[in-house]
Length: 434
Image (cartoon, rainbow, N blue to C red):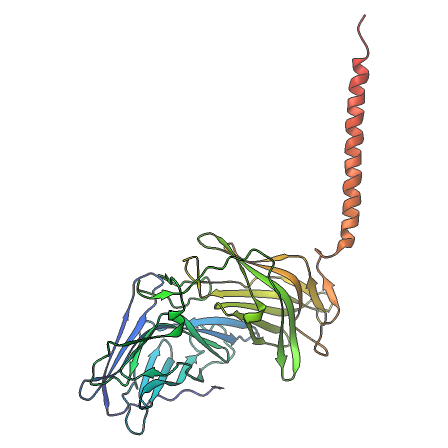
């Protein structure tokens, strides 16, 4: 659930007196591992945690458009309210950073295990990173921690990147080292590795995670790898059918095959598999967004807008594309890129746009999207089905006929001219001087 009321300051209980928070990591686009050591009144550790985290947030602007912003803990992190807990309050790990942002998690235990319970994240849209935000002020989301139970007196470790999505927020965590309910004030030497790390082969170290328009947190030490994704599909991608609902009615329809062309260290083609892709987004009267999130941590946002023409008619078009690739490709850095100055897939409002031939959407010089068998209708969907389609010029075979006829006539003229020149030369060669 998400609320728009400020999250209250975490409880500060008498049993918790000392907490050490360390930030570190080189690099110009520097990201900071957060290290927290919560101690009780006897100076004994009760919670130890070190992890990397980043937040990708979608928000509405004053022009009813949607944009993305990224938050990450930086050097001004504080830790008010972290506590060892007591008989009435659960242990709590809490941090605050930036312009009014905070994150916390509490823990529960049984006789044999412990685990995270409730995660709370508050972001403040009054921060400058939320440019032209329609709603100003703190917004809180609360979500159940998906972490599996861990044996007591064991340190949970997980290098693998994991994410939690709730409302318009994606929370990313990786390089996690955690022990709650530390016994005798000493962090255990026994490890419990997450299943994702056990199933990951040859992880690749990523030094930094930088973005073109959104900056996401990065790994700062050589011992903190992200998993490598090295898929190189070359065949035509599967065609996916995607839709969004407003209540019980479909408000956006999309059908397409998607292929990413990424040029980092070397060009790589990546097919998006619709069978393992999650669909989210939003519908509006003048702006709509389709977000696709596949199982390999690839996020693609298509933002559509409505415009008025000089003929007092309304048309829709693809205005913006944003892509975030969290998993590295061939050992290269994860990336984020966007293009907010598009004007393609243009047709009348109330119609659908269709293009069966392959099209290329330029995001950046190093990142393009290839679409196949495209059909899209982001507004005014009637009876949960597509309206009449406006075909793209690539599919319009009628314009090929005059082109073919013209080319044939031009070729015929060239042949006649060449034959005439050759004939003239032979005629001149037939006369000899006496």
